[in-house]
Length: 194
Image (cartoon, rainbow, N blue to C red; front, top):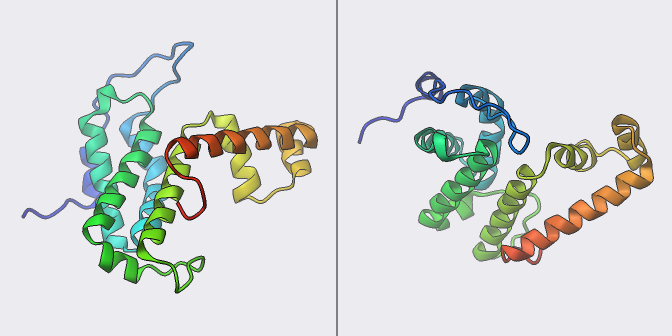
């Protein structure tokens, strides 16, 4: 079996090969593969590591996702969301193949000793699905979620940054969460347990 290329070798191999996509009113400019690699490599590694709990495996999965992206570049309109979906699917495939090993090594402070492997896998799949759904949101909606749930800002502070009233921030977040909840239900996720 040939050795896998390192991330640095992969970066050189993934030089942009697609012509620039001109923006149209209905479609934003598609970044180059190199730009996408620079912006998303670290977040994807963290995302994959969060699912498989092994650095080497996470690196292989992210490399595979970028290679698959490169192979299908012309057909993909939203490469960032596609990468997260591909990474999620590769992680889930790995976990299914190595379920007993991976689940016994995973140590998440939110898990209790009584959690069953199926529940753990369901929770990881639910989190992966949620991350994909968030990636597919418009940039303004993603920023709102980022400020509230990652940066943990109050509605007032978010409103100051985005030039909105606190009430508008609350209203928008409520509807975004409702939309995400409905989308999760469509994927069969009905609780935090997956």
